[in-house]
Image (cartoon, rainbow, N blue to C red; front, side):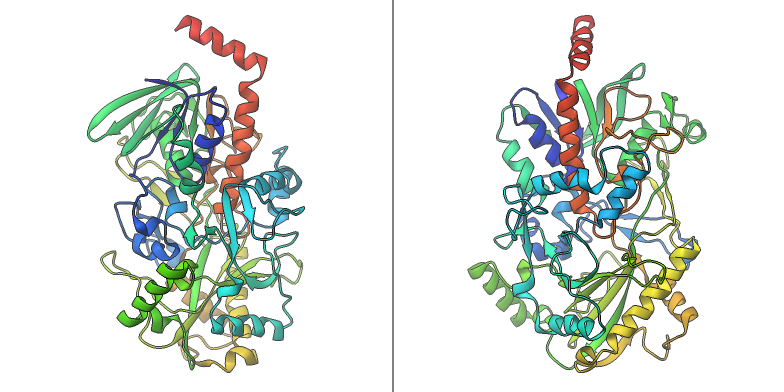
Length: 554
């Protein structure tokens, strides 16, 4: 079967491409999704991410290889395997990133990607609670809601503590600057998750020119010379082939997009030769430059009620459920990461280098995937942090020529001195905020790590705690970086794979550097901008002429 555009991956970016490319009715679009439909109640309710955290039916449940700097632990990396991708299973924190993040993209040689350039696409994708302003949109598919009205009482103690510390309040992390403490925005609408699937793909699938195939694992891209012509997939044990008249668009994410390129013969020559994969085009940067945010939590027992009591008892859960069903409000309609902010602990720069999360709930991430996320059996809360712009770089490599085998994720966390220094800075920041009167008044004790294990001022102990207890905050990106040099980048500033025709990448893997915050919002921006570029290129006379010649020779 033949379509104008083939989109590999119905995730945060792929859903947007499907809607935008099909909107005119001029082009036919095929979406290939390795997972199934997002038709369960748990994909709609915001707190449903706790249910999907260890669900192999909708989650790839990846792990890194053992991390030498993290006590040789394998770090869990959940990724969406369902319509909507990770936007259907994440914690919904909506943060664009700092303006300088995108200015850095442009400075690296990517014309058109400065903050000024990308702001219109952030505005285009959102309907923000603030309305139509110079920095926010009011008519986009993704509804962005503040949690300010619904935050827990103990969350206000965190905000007051930051104020007592002289940390400025920021009422809009997605405004002109990111620095300060405040309440997070989330992509929800009327108490329900506003995923890319709900906002973009489901409306698009009502069109006759959009088709989706579920449980279709793409095994390789097909080529005629150096031009992508289609894909081969495995679906329910059957091999199928689909052809693209115009372009193949890879939206499989920071793990599976480089994996698919390598399986298709595009990547480092030595790696492909080692696995017996015929070389189509040598591109050494495929799978390199992998980045992620690494996070650790500090746990506290409180002397006032927290959400532990609500989520930890049957009666409490029944009350929350009833509140949600009747009003679409309450904790079930929110993210557990209610507040936090972006802070500078670098004496040489006022720009934020640390992100904090405050949860009015304390829970341990279970080590077994047979366990569930459950709160601790007493009133508690947690305060977590991660460095914003880590400099450690990892890689993605195929494990075998078989597409069913997960890629090898070498995250290489904490392998630079800057990252180590910022871990210590973040640990000190948490301890400092916890000394503010507003939080001291509601805190019984630090239960983990505890002052006896990690004394104040003991940098070595703080670092060791982080090495043994940190985990991914699930922001993998950068593994097919955008840049002008084919030796160090995979796509150009128009997201075209270097040296290959009719093949683009539109997902988190193209990030030259990770943004200062949660990455779902910038991924959606990349998709909005990518869709505009694809449509603009399709209208170019040279593109149209080339397509006509290809059709004539077929």
